[in-house]
Image (cartoon, rainbow, N blue to C red; front, top):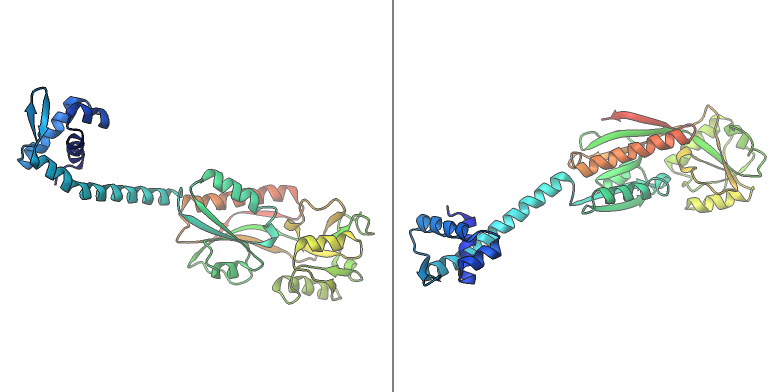
Amino acid sequence: MLDPVKLRVLRSVVETGSIRASADALGYTPSAVSQHLSALRRETGLELVERSGRGILVTAHARLLAAESGPALDALGALGALERTVRDLRSGRTGTLRLGYATSIAATWVPELARDVRRAYPDLGLELALRDCSCEDLAEAGMDIVVGEGVGPIDSVDWEIHEVLEEGYVALVSADHPLAERPTVRLKDLAEESWVTDDPIDSFWFDRIGAACRAAGFSPCVDVNPSDFPTVLGFVATGDHVSVQPSVIAQNLRADIVAIPLAPPAPRRRLRVQVRRTVARNPAAQYIVQRIHAVAAKRSAEIPGLMHLVGDSA
C-alpha cells in the first residue's frame, strides 16, 4: 500500500514545481521532501522528477499519479475526520443529549445545570424539554436523561436509575396569614382554608395530597386551579388561599409568601434521574448526573425536610 504521506508530498511538488517551495508549504526541510520522493520512486518503480539545472522537472508519471491520488487522499481525510468525530462522541464533547425535566425544578435547578453543562461541553447540543408529567412520560417522549418524580415501577433494563432526593411538603401562606408564624403546620390546620394548586385535580400528584388530607379527616377545598405556579403564588399572596407544594419548589419565594413545613404524618416524594443505558457511559451524561447530585446536596443543606440520596442507583 502506498504511503499517503509520500503521496501528499508528491502532490505538493507537482503543484509547486519545486522541492523548496513544497518544503516551505508542508513545513518540511528540502532534504525531507527529497527523501520522500526517493522512497516513493522506489515503491512505485517510476521516475517522478528529473533534475533540470538547479531545479527539477516533474514527469508525466508523477502528474498522473498525483492526480489519481487525490480521491484516495480525500477519502482518507474523510475517514480521519470520522474517527475524530467518534473520539469526540466517546468523550462527550459533541453530539446531542435530550434532557427532560419536571416543573418542580424548572426555575431553580435547570438554568444553573444547563449553564454548567454548556460551559463544560461547549460543542455538545443540549436539548431541554419541560413537561408537566412523570419520569415515565418523559421517557416515552424520547428523552436521553430525565429528571423528575417516578410514579411507576422502575424499568432498569433500558434505564440507569439514580435516586437523588427525598422531600416533604410545605404549606404556602401569605406573610400576614394567621399560620405564618408557626414553625410547622398540620394538614388538618388547613381544613377550613380555600386552596389553590397548579396540579390537575385528577392527577397522581394532587391525589397524593388529597389522600393525606382525607386521612386527616377532610377533603381539601380547591377554589382555584391555574396551570402555572406563579399564578398560584399570586392567589396565596392575597391571604385568601393556601397551597401545599413539594419542599423543593418553595425556594426564592416572593417576600409576601411564607413556606411552612408540614408536620408528620405528611406525604413525601422522591426525585430521581433516569439515564438511557445507551448514553450512560457518555462523559457529558455522567457530568449531568454529578451536577444534579451536587445541586441536590446543596438544596438539602438549605431547605428543611430535604434528604440527599447519595449513591442510591440501579
